[in-house]
Length: 281
Length: 282
Image (cartoon, rainbow over all chains, first blue to last red; front, side, top):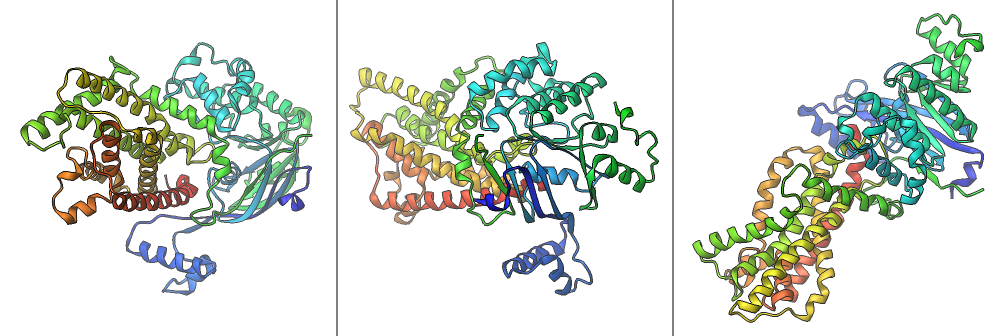
């Protein structure tokens, strides 16, 4: 189908993706805005510009906010790419679109292979189910059969270090245990592309370094990782390449060291010790 | 090198851009969710699964006393208890699936906001999990039916139409999913619906020939209206299958079938539309 414009060696292709949120202000104007917005859309016009000109809107219409705009990039198979930027820059929204948690307003994206994700501290856990049951739940969400999950089960459990809590409902887990199990599942199940958002924010130092090692292994095995983090140290350790997001746009795309340095400089933070890569661990 | 599936991501296009293939690829997940639904309901109760058997009996008992003895509503020559339990087979299944489906977004919020899978798996899983309760209710029915056959005075026997039972179950499931998914989609925007749903369900039960036979409705206008209620028609049909008493006309089948079909199409479309940006609105 789309293979013509999606070469074999790519894992992800993103073209002109944008996401516009309508901030839901409930007041007398909302219904009119909504109606207008829909009419404009039906007539094939871009509501964002058109609404400014019609019906008493002086400038940009209220309540529309571009979380992402005009994002395009390619990721080759086996690449580990870091997504960096300030809070609200659009990194997480980008991952959510790729994970199909939400839809883009504009643009297209293609992903090759099974996608595993761990978004904003947590994954698809059902709080009432035990750790064991959630492993199977996540596997079947990825479309794996019970047999396939059985084969990975021991690996997941031993990596997660949750031990005797395996048969406890995850709602009773500490946030650390929760993240450990979530990461183990995401890392061990048969996925070709991993989307990881702030996965290391909660686990302890020992587990963090274990995770980073694991991510390096995953990357070495030819799987693709997109990694959102605010830890520049971690980003530089495991990512060869970085995308810098700034207010919904892609501000930079290049080698991790360069992009991280540019980002830190733009944030007014000097980056001592960042230049010699030997210090990173 | 094995060919890896390619996922195309693009803006949502219309109500009926439903990912059917993806949905059918998630059968295992559907069964897992259904099993979870059954196992969770009676966690932390003493009687546990026995409730599945006790509930319909108690309800039918209350109905027998209130609607039968006190109000004196006729049951078309069927023993009261069997009449009510027969109707409750339909009603309990319908209500369970409809309420489950209508709360799809609420109950699966934790999953929906973290992982992708075809969202429709959740409402449909209720149609599967409630089959367990339906089966147990049916068992209860036949226990009392056997007892009635041995010791009761009224001669009743199932008809060959009983073979069409799977069709009837599909009919009820389709109705419940249609309306349930429609309500689920609407509640993401209009939370009011969550509060009015109990009243709607109550009114629906009273208009569904559960506690009275359709034959007992003398007013021709109301009769026509009630004949367009897929749940009521199903209740009549199930009693006819099981006991050979009940009124199912072609007109009623056509009208209520049309209602069910429209609800299903609307529900599918609205649900599909709502699931697209549900995560942005919570």
